[in-house]
Image 1: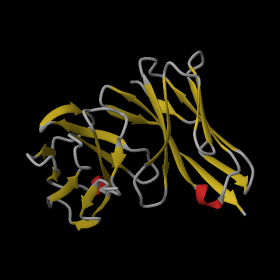
Image 2: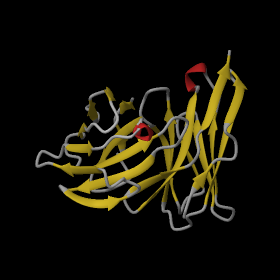
Image 3: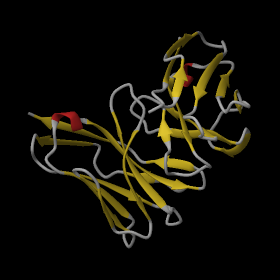
Image 4: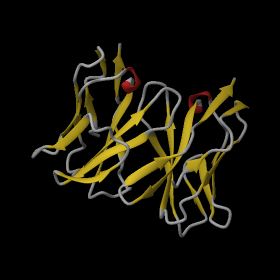
Length: 110
Length: 113
């Protein structure tokens, strides 16, 4: 079946560094991609989204890049802070459901 | 701002018992979605409702059923519980089956013993 998956299960960075979390997707029919942050015991929290007709979208300290040629998404977090420590999921929205990829655990060291 | 409300937050049941999880969507959101997240896993789509009708169905066991009521709240009914049903169950809501505004609740942690 179609799937969305992440390359790296864990990422450890120093406070203040930039973080890059990657994701590969296989459903080329998806028209919308979303990054979520999930803290322990909490629901997924929306970070940023991007439509399939865009290559890049910037938010506050975050940037999402979409490369449709290789079916690849990335989330860049600038000046990573301890509060950014969480599991990050990419998801594609198609029809009315989200299909999540494997999460990446981001740990920010002080 | 109002969020998606789920109850209870925690639930402990024995094998073969039944459980009912409730979800109250954001006001004016007419679509509700249910997801199951096992330990260390990504959320898996179970089922969704739009305007009180089932709109999509994912990997929901036959032992589970759900519905959306006239006030748009939804309930997930789980019968003949198995140990493998232990998971976090998230509800999300959105306006008109759209991706924008898709918001998750804090989840119900179900433990089957």
